[in-house]
Length: 318
Image 1: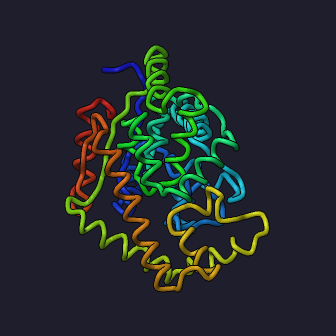
Image 2 (image 1 turned 45 degrees about the horizontal axis):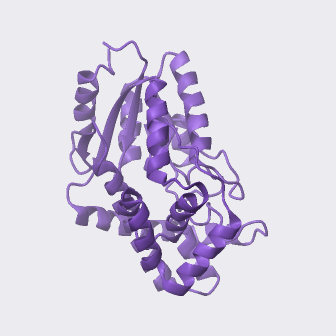
């Protein structure tokens, strides 16, 4: 049995039932939850992030929820620092960190560390953005495919932010993101990696159409719960704008565009659902290449005993 302390990762696409399973595990195991979600860190962004309600958070406190104002940035490096501190604190109290969420980059940052990427270069970025406007994102994706095919396979041709950043890194440093991340993986391996015995669970419906239906139902429920009014409160703030990471969160950007008259209510709903489906697809892409994952079907009624049986086999449970 490993001498390293245990930790549990509970991953999956949006609307797959991660929170429900995490709460079920926390009821029967000495776990404390750590949110792995780039939007749940923001205060005042509750409905559109499907944040657990106050009663749930009181009964099952989540680390790394409501720790930033929407005007503040929160990076993968910030998450890694905060998550490692929370994990150490939980472990010191004889409990098990249960990390739950769908921001796959955050899990990767924990397992492998973070590459030392060059800072932003305003001139290079402006040139790339002008080229995207002039020639289209397909041209940028083709350039990335030529210099860094691994990143091109990972980054969708319609993802301007990540396309520009990947090419910016290449032009500024002379090294691709893939090369820089390989260097970081080597360094993390030499450092011994994450100092925990990690059990990795992933939950999703077996049928993709089922997930699409759940996404649409959840988006409609958010609208019924007052999602537009929530974004209106953010929109009234002078210190927030559409390009901030908080407002670029799935759903929030579409409602923001609706409030500014660029989308009708019907268009906002449609594009919000599409954007959420695209997020789920990216999450699946990450997870398909993930190593040592135990998959669970969202619709199975025995996921808790299945998860507990798996945790026992990997020596997470004594």
